[in-house]
Length: 363
Image 1 (tube, rainbow, N blue to C red):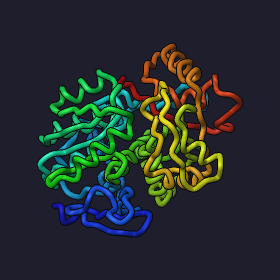
Image 2 (image 1 turned 90 degrees about the vertical axis):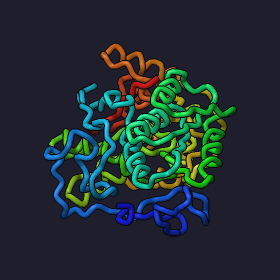
Image 3 (image 1 turned 90 degrees about the horizontal axis):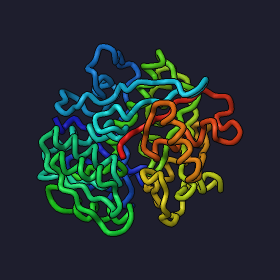
Image 4 (image 1 turned 30 degrees about the vertical axis):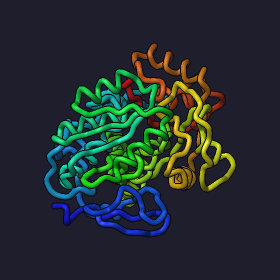
């Protein structure tokens, strides 16, 4: 069925490539791929009639035909955090984070392409998800992680059968090591940043919100942003649902003040983000000094009428504790959104709007 797979297209220079033979990045500019795929709004979308997994949104997904890989991911519940804010409990995903939605797409794509092995890089959640779904698909997997990655997360990767390679240095060092391995023949790079199939998996987060709110979306989606894969997936879904007549929300992106290249670029009115230094932060999952899709993230937030918010380490800690007192113990990165728009946030960052934010729990 690989002949029917939508192909890659570079958003910077228009280079196109067949997914079966393409390198992991654009061979002209070295940037990440987008996908030559737009769902037809005329196609019926009846998720309640579909399986209890991401594949309930099959008409909006770029993998045609029968699917084989699933762990009943998605369809996590919404619970109120306040009068105007709901939390989506993504710690109820199979590997405890929203990354499962993208990982299942990459694993299903890899299963169809039948590589000798799969490689990925991650500071934790994405690697855990890719390892689990590769195990489900029967694929050999290696995950490159930076030193200091949570031992609990690397243990979960190894438990799924993945080889874990700890790379000296920070997040970017792990990414470079994975990309070097991806150059070898017979290797599929399951990159949650460079491969657009991942984004088309994460977009179902918004389709779930739309379904759970009875065919509408909140006035704002608050999203933690490091590489920006959830935000860009959300932007895809918002555009697709707008073509079905759904009113689009503003995208509010949250970064840790310690590592905030996108927020700084947004505040400066820049179209791209300059790399920043790697500094320690509780929100390690979004501590990305040089996000490859920075231009796309900035453009998506601006087009939505949204904004960037940053949070201090003290507010991250306070927000995590506040959520725990509400019965929701989550990882510090997940607490970033509540730190940005919750009761401890200065002023009214939501400007009176209703909002949904995700909560993950893998530590």
